Image (cartoon, rainbow, N blue to C red; front, top):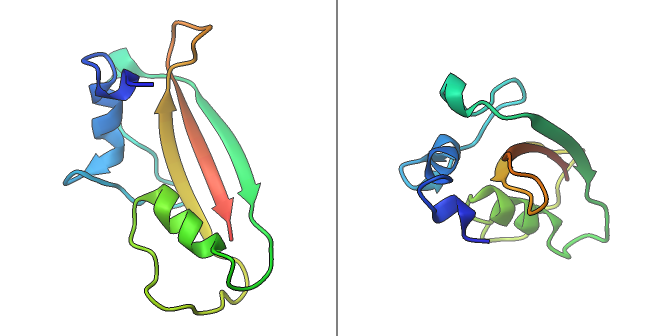
Length: 104
């Protein structure tokens, strides 16, 4: 669980942070890692659906490290957020970079 804070995980953590906050990536952007630290990227698309006002947009904002909207406003259409999350599986020795496309 504390791999990102270890010396081996810090370069991966710094690739997704900007000024100690999670960096917002566009649809075609990705974190920049040195060639020696290049890792495979695993992509998932997550579609969030539910009743109005239950916190879907706030959940996406929290996962993305951005402040949640202070007042409730209904999301019109679909908002797509791209989130990167480095992880090191317990079974494997090599880290992976999860690319999550969150559709709200």
